Amino acid sequence: MELSATGEPVVVHEDTQVEVGIYLRPGTLTLTRDGEDFEVHHALVQFASVDETPWAAQEVKFSAKRGDGKTVGLTVELLNDAFDGPRTSVPDAVWEVVALAATSAGDVGITYGAPGRS
Image 1 (cartoon, rainbow, N blue to C red):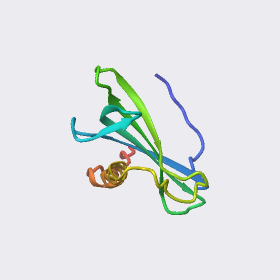
Image 2 (image 1 turned 135 degrees about the vertical axis):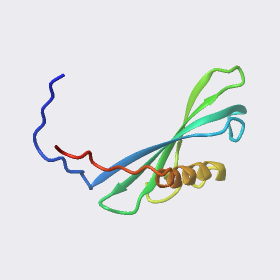
Image 3 (image 1 turned 180 degrees about the horizontal axis):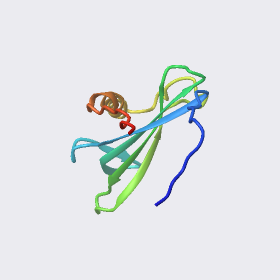
């Protein structure tokens, strides 16, 4: 494969988004929607920073299993309708997932060094 590239990439800081995925131990989180239980096994938390403001969690996309074993996706919006603060109806356990994602992003020990040039 032949590949070439030009330019110098620059991150746009006006509205930067990062998604952090975490796997949850089976049986540790159950979401209930309209009386139906869903066992969560994965969460993808979206964080954003607008105009270089502190990072805020915007939403969590959960992968879960219904009682019949079928996998479904559930999205929880974390910001209120004015997008200026947290949605008050979000259960504490969902905020715990957000905290786990935020800390795991920096705690997993991933380091990166650009490969040496020869």
